[in-house]
Image (cartoon, rainbow, N blue to C red; front, top):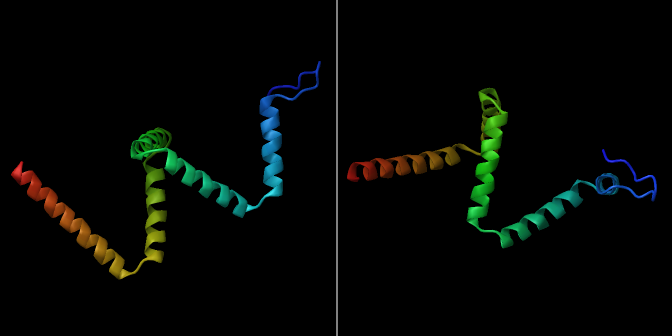
Length: 114
């Protein structure tokens, strides 16, 4: 971490940022962070197009793949599956199964016609 400049007793930008972040964390609750996150998300969506999201998604995916192994993906897949099962009923699974089957059928048909 950068040291204070002893001659003029000023703190570095890094020190000021850390001090401000710690103060904000002490003075605000989760709701505050959710609100500013939503505002930031809406602003970002207004200012960027689909290509922006595709680029950052691809970069994030590549970084995650570099940093994690198969066990990581198995674990998060199981967690996601359990959460999905808890939040949805049989009709949900029937609907997505039907949609998947129809998409696969279209894909096979397009491959035969190519």
